[in-house]
Length: 350
Image (tube, rainbow, N blue to C red):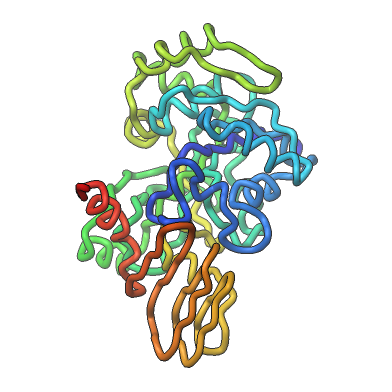
């Protein structure tokens, strides 16, 4: 590919569904969940091809700045900029910060905490998207759905624009099960992966048209930003004035020239302990064990300890995670409900 692409890695999420490992102090992108690298390191390493990608721009929170720099240094990655949001405002303002830092760049925007198993398919999808992005289209990547998933948004594919590229017909919010089943049967829909490719100016122009107050606030925050080496610290008061909206809601659902590249690339948002189990190296009875674990006559479990010994005997289809002062136990298939436990703990007194 002739044009160099600037990756924008969004590293601001909390990942509470992976409690007790993932917390506000140490969110999931900073953890090692599969393999030897953290999710942030894995994402950066995926973009290490200097022939394709320029140095990345990282958008994160100030609390994670030191840890991000240390983790990236360990894999030899020096970011072009580390933009530190003074307050979380969702993805549209976060991406605008990066676009204003590199207004002439072709930006590949992606979360820091997703897994991609097929890098060849990932790169081929970028190659299909790049010509449209160069023409001013805002391109998103849609994942070929594997099941009727209610935890993801969907993209309805419209008319073809080029080989393997379609105009977006519409975005679909996270659906109920019956709707997800219908979309899977009908085909023509992709999961919304939250990965985008576009010219920075095309995005900012679309934001100026569809979310002008947001663009004004972010521009003011960048204009008044403090800089410390690669760190960029937008003005807190001006940035807080930006509406807290996703890129889908603020821009893409309203813009005219929005395209989607459907791709099957072994993608997972690793949004639950069930997802971690599916990506792990299982034994011959389907159990994934990490840390100090003894598992006898145990089938189809995820058992992970970052501290105490976990001894399991004769159990199946469980998720058991122990770290520090906390232990999580729940059946496989219900890990999306971890937030219920967190809410219950917040409600405790004494």
